[in-house]
Amino acid sequence: MSDNRPALGVGMVGYAFMGRVHSQAWRSVGAFFDLPVVPVMAVLSGRSKDRTAAAAANLGWAAVENDWKDLISRDDVDIVDICTPGDSHAEIAIAALDAGKHVLCEKPLANTVDEAEAMVAAAERAAQRGVRSMVAFNYRRVPAIALARRFVADGRLGELRHVRAQYLQDWIVDPEFPLVWRLQKDKAGSGALGDIGSHIVDTAQFVTGQKLTGVSALTETFISDRPLADQSAGLAAGAADDAESTGTVTVDDAAVFIGRLSGGALASFEATRFATGRKNAMRIEVNGSHGSLYFDFESMNELWFHDHTLPAEEAGFRRILVTEAGHPYAGAWWPPGHGLGYEHTFSHEVKDFLEAIGTGTDPVPSFADGLAVQRVLAAVEASAANESRWTPIS
Image (cartoon, rainbow, N blue to C red; front, side):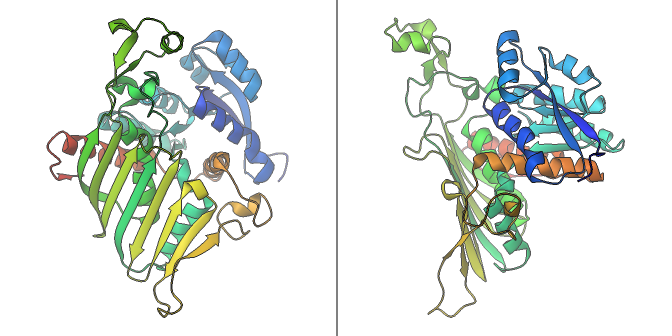
């Protein structure tokens, strides 16, 4: 690729878990993909001056701002990458888009449907000026998931009849795990439903090419009170446990729901942080008239496929190792058989976003796609609050 490619300065807001993995993506993407533009890691923003400076030095950012508004106003920032809790997504994204900055925003898009709708409106206004936006559903960029989508689009599964999607984790099973922001509705919007349930909703809709039209749901909070985050260390060391040392969990720990897709298929979903022994089991199975496929992120380089058009004596699920050069994304990395990891999905995400900006096309998933997922989450919460009543999705 020619060295006269335009350089685009990236400003990232947030430096914790998502900030670290996004930083890895911005650092690595140009080394493996031929891009129409060159990303420059210009500015990192965070509220703590010392912690932000330390993170910038460690992650490779050239400068620091302690107010995201100052980051947006900088002339050396062309792209704003939002890696903050959901309660700030709408304000930051709308301000950045209105300022003419391209925006990559972590999922779920917002904490409410109203916020997501405002973000879509801002994205539509910005798109008229050539400003692009994308929501960061990284699991779409797992090569095996992208291959599954190709199989469905090519008709290999025939008429889709049943979809099963799960996201199983166990990271808050311990009742002494502290009351972090992800367990507070005012910051996170919802619990397992929004954090990991949003992934399986988007993945199911992406792989099938269909939208959910209605749901019936149950949610549960298994542990209602937890140690406050800044006091959990003291409690572990034997500090007194009184009413002021704990706080109330205001989100769900697990959500299960059934639904129907726009093509008529049945769908079932399960998102939980209380599946003991499961670390990051994001799974999807799609059953159709001509075949089925199955994926589990804990074996992320494998896709299992059953061709039901074969004679019964030959039929059965077969394992596809998704590392060949012809598989989605995989050819840019290592020789066949040398598997990819979690961090690569974010490099793929950034690559697709930069290509869309460079070629003047609309990236996917769009903010409108993020809104579609937000509407499903809202319908699940409404159904669960109303005795699991069937709740249509607009």
